[in-house]
Each structure stands twice: as structure tokens, then as C-alpha cells.
Amino acid sequence: MLNRIRKSFSTKLSLGILLMAVTIFVVSLGVLFTQSRHIIRTEAVGRTKAVLNTTMQHIVRNLMTIENATNTYSWMIEQQFQPEQILGFTNRIVRFNPHIDGCSISAEPNMFKKYGRYFSAYTVRETDTITTVIEEEYEYFQKIWYKTPRNLESGCWVVYTDEVDSLELTLDGMIASYGKPLYSADSSMVGIISTDLSLLRLSKVMSEVKPYPNSYFMMIDNEGRYFIHPDSTRLFTQTIFTNVDPRKQYDIIALGHEMTSGKQGQMVVNVDGEPCLVCYQPVTGTKWSLAIVCPDSDVLAGYYRLTYIVVPLLVVGLLIILILCHRAVTVSIRPLNQL
Image (cartoon, helix red, strand yellow):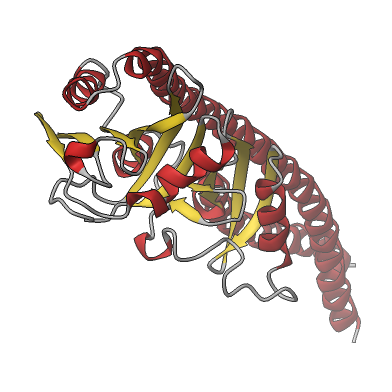
């Protein structure tokens, strides 16, 4: 009976010591992992914002270059608004400005009797080739790149899908276009100059600079429509609010409202079933918003690797402590058995 009591005491003492060790270890590791996670996420935010700022500077520089080229040439075009000169201007604008992928100068209806209702000169850059043509007749007056600056009577940026209206000269994918009205000496509008930036080319450049292997950029307009996104099926046909359940995906809705309102910041959002860090900011001079999405599996990859290493070590360490404690208590009790 006495031996049984002593063995029971030995077991209880070992378990007590183990329980105390487990408590200390768990609390210590909990604090350590919590702080580590916070530090890693803070560093991720800083790293992601740095990449976003660099990319934004690249985009704004391109946009400003296109705007400046358009504004610089517009007054010369207004002074020489004749078909032959217009063709030369569109070619010159594209040829001497590598950031510009295309340029059209389109006249108001019946501006030139020789050409009837329509006259539009277009130059496009295709790889290493620059082609200039007079477009075949089509109702370009209803195109967003024409009617938007015409209605606003000022320069502005628009985004649209590239369409084959009358030519086989196209820029694949989405196009950002800066349009500006042209005026005659008596201040009447004579046409629109529109300079194009291929968003497909821009997105390829952006994809080369990302903070994590699976991170990506997306860009939306003030209505939430995608025009840069790795999933091409969403481009222009869907918005950030499409097929979103407000009860389960309120974080996506919050992100959409932040971006369409022109705000800047960062959020942790569940994207396609995976938590992601999203940093976003408005594109200067436009109604667009750029965001970079970084999955948590990338952001916290080092943290997860540390967990996979530490947890097994912790379990093994506790088992070793249990064995050592049991042996120590057993050895200390043996002299009592001899009494």
C-alpha cells in the first residue's frame, strides 16, 4: 500500500511539474508568436506599400508624359487642322513618345468636304512597327474616347475595351486614353485628339515588380470596374462588387467603397476564400484606384515555417521533461522505500 501511495505521489508530482512547464511554455510561446505575427505583418505592410508607391510613380509618370505630349501638340494641330497635317501629327506623337501606344485625331462631322461626314487619322505602335492610316468610316462620335472629352469640353482619361471598328490595327485588351478637344480660331470645337496607353502592356510591366510570389495588382475605376486584374474574365465586364454576398463578404464591399471613394490605406480582406493583405491608393489625375493583393500564405510564410518547427520541438521537449521529472522523483523516493 505504501509503495502504491509513493508511486501515485511520484506520478502526481511529475504531472504537476509538467503542467507548470507547459503553462509557462505555452504563455511564453503565445506571446512570442503573437508579437512575431504582428512584426511580420507590419513589415509586410511597409514592404507592400513601398512596391505600391514605386509602381504608382511609374504609372503617374507614364500618364503625365502622355498628357504633356498631347497638350504640347494640341495647339500646333489647332493651327494646322488639315487632313495631311493631321496624319503627320499622329505619326509624330507616337514615334517620338515611347510611352504612347496609339494616337487618333478625329474631326467633327462634315469638317472636310472631301471626306464627307467622317475623318479620323490613327497611328498605332505594334512591337517595332508604327502604322498611320485614315480610318474607314464608322460612327466614332459615339465612342467613349470621343464623346467624353467632347461633352466635358476638357482633357480627361477614359478606359475602354479595344474594338476592331474599321481596321485590323488594334491594341489588345484594355486601353487608357487621354482625350482633349481641339478648337478653331473662333473657339468652335473641330475635333478630338486621343492618345492611348495599352493597359495590357502596363500590367505586364507591373507584374514583374511584386513583393511576394503570388501577389498581384488590380486597378478599378470610380464605378468599381476592373481594367487591370490577373483574371482576364473580370476585365470591364465585372466590378469589385459583382457576385458579392453582403453578409459574408462585407470586407470586399468595404474595400470597394474605399477604393471607389479615392481613399488610401490597407485592409486584411478575404479574397476568393483566402485572407489577403490589400494596400490601395488613388491614381493621381484620374478617377481610378490601384491596389496590390498579397495572400497571407505568402506574407506569413516565414511565420508558418517557424510554427511547423517550434511546435514539434515543444512537444518533444515536454515529453523529455515529463520523463526526466518522473525519473528524478522516483530516484528521490527510493531512499524512503528502504526505511
